[in-house]
Image 1 (tube, helix red, strand yellow):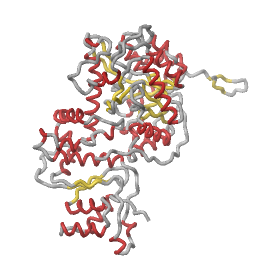
Image 2 (image 1 turned 60 degrees about the vertical axis):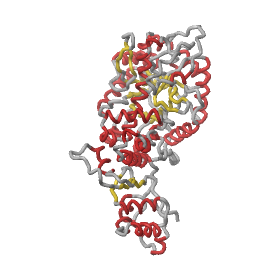
Image 3 (image 1 turned 45 degrees about the vertical axis):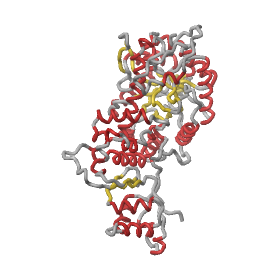
Image 4 (image 1 turned 180 degrees about the vertical axis):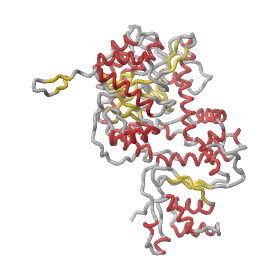
Length: 260
Length: 307
């Protein structure tokens, strides 16, 4: 069959797209039977295999640029292949692909010695979700000026669509920065860092916060009124300073205006 | 981990704007600054619909800025028109949201599939050309056109394999899809060249038999050269370099028969700096210009463009 002239032979029915798909992610599956001249079509079918696997690895690299530098190309691709086999994309929106990478890394036995990788993945995923999040005008200090203290205490601040608070027992801020280049000296892996992810306008911001600040902002984002969140944070973290945390939240664009 | 939800895009403020018979360029985020600063003289831009299905942020801000200044074409790469399953209603709704918001001059998709059993393979995969696949594709094209309330163009594929069960030629298959569904066609001249080389038929014969009256847009892109198991040339539709001289020659042949048509330069991998892409677009523009109908000067000295 050429591309130009239609023949008249009826042909034989194949296994359809399923037969073609079977070997795309599995190099051990033979070239599909329905392909013309299949015995000599390994390289031809291989173009599709390569497009699919390399395309998905590239998409994962683009979504996790810090992990790519931390792990190196070879290791990242090797882990990526395992991830793709276990969690192939289920949607044509490629920005959804790789959403479960952090959970996968956390449960991937060969990486048990590097528990920080999963938390870096959580932060990178939060960055990507913030990048695509809906546009919204952030809450400013002016919006809160003039509120009576009682009114402040009862205030529930709606999270900005881009907001994420990532708490970690690992130096995720230092590791996240690998996307801008590998530092001369690696971070102190015993350090704990937490991150605030916001996008007040178009640029995503990753701000390092203290553990008490992360706890407080996380409570607000979960819908706790300002007064309750403050008390709960202070009970657990006596050194917590409300004014600093609130200023940080407003400067970063973490919340939007409460509904009147 | 949550998925990124699309698109509560605000109601459109864009007035529909047709795609001119000039060259256009596939839009890349890294070029937007150069394009806006230099007010680049480009006929239109084309985007992949799937890249603008997020809720907000920089992608939409950039595309709105482009759409305010240039005609826009929306090209889908994930509808899986050739898939065995139904068209994904969620994806179709997202696609419609992008089309409704940006009011593109042209909307197109591919003769290919990319989803099977709910797995999205992120590639344009080939299918046999049979009566059964034809009926399915016509049905799917109809569903898309009905959902978005307008005609779409279907693009001919670049392929590396053929199927023993095929009973239609690709040209006849494309012709019949257009005839039955009422869709238009997007002729990718590089795909014609790549497939012809890979399957041993004449690219010129393909074009000669093609229903060019259905073609509303042309794609040009670069291909890579490899070899198959038998050492025969195997061309790869890589979109990673300049358009090959042989493809320009085939394009001139097409233009001579169709007259001026919107023509897109596709460069998706190893994307060069903006001036290089702009130069490729300029080259296409010059060729389109040569095929413009002559301008006749009327008796009263008024220039009339011949139809």
